[in-house]
Amino acid sequence: MKPLIAVPIGDPAGIGPEIVVKSIANKDVFQAARCIIIGDKKIIEDAIAFTKISLKINVVKKPDEGVYEENVLNLIDLDNVIMNEFKIGKVSGMCGKAAYEYIEKSIELANLREVDAVATTPINKEALKAGNINYIGHTEIFGALTGTKDPLTMFEVRGMRVFFLTRHVSLRKACDMVTKDRIKDYVIRCKDVLKTLGVSDGTMAIAGLNPHSGEHGLFGDEEVNHVTPAVEELRKEGYDVVGPIGADSVFHMALQGRFNSVLSLYHDQGHIATKTLDFEKTIAITGGMPILRTSVDHGTAMDIAGKGIASEVSMIEAILIAAKYSPYFTTQSHKQT
Image 1 (cartoon, rainbow, N blue to C red):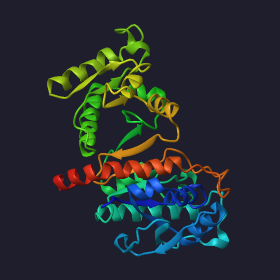
Image 2 (cartoon, rainbow, N blue to C red):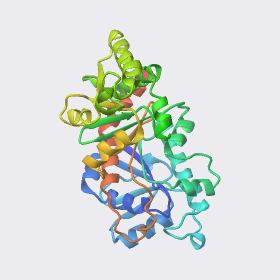
Image 3 (cartoon, helix red, strand yellow):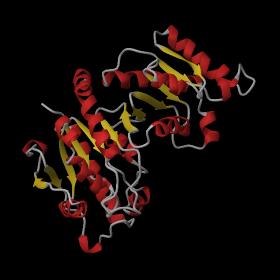
Image 4 (cartoon, one colour):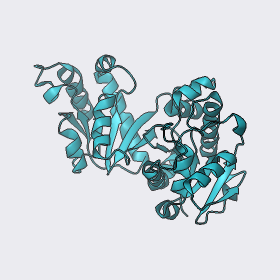
């Protein structure tokens, strides 16, 4: 049976509802997965109207009540948007709160094993704050609602997988966070994430921080003092890892298949490599949690919301990757529980 993927529609005022509607109408998505949408029926009806997509809405209470046939959009309707207060393309607390509730319901379904994975759409940090939601983004919400202390972020694009040692901190602070102990901890946990996705063979590469990986201390000593010692200790402990490898070549080597993944040492290092390769098909996977979550890696695009022109390519890819990995993840999760 095809994997069952929960898809919250994101911020109702953004492009999330539109790309969800377009993705459900996509034949590749229909062939790969069964999708249960979490949202507001009025918002979905509006998106169907302005995209001119022919879909039948089937409102259900639980995923197993869905009719998973072509051109049917199965919806759990939270009915949490007041339409006479709603303005598409505008940030509002109402929409921030609604977006959170869609995510919350999706996580509940995944925690109960009523769905195999969650594929998320964009939310707006300003709207979350206006709605008195005390999380800055998806990762923090998923971490809190699954009891996961430090979820890992992995990007996948064209088979290349990239993890991140540091994320939303200044570049100066990121450099200070490149320590031997942190690298070891992340490599071990990243390897565990790969196993849950069915990836047990292959070598993980650690990118260099400085130009040419520091040239043995000439351009910085982080590689000498932290990265190399971490790699040496990890290899002695049986982990298949190499590095540091210059960031100007390691991602190309991974794309060629020489490594099963790369540990990027700071946010933009890995983001530039993946998004330059293929911006729309760069998909985020949140690892280290008891549930599987994939996501588009773009924003709510309020400026074009409601115009019917938003690209659904990233949403389609997020659902397809969730469907690809969920059989492995479900098996590993059941072993762990």
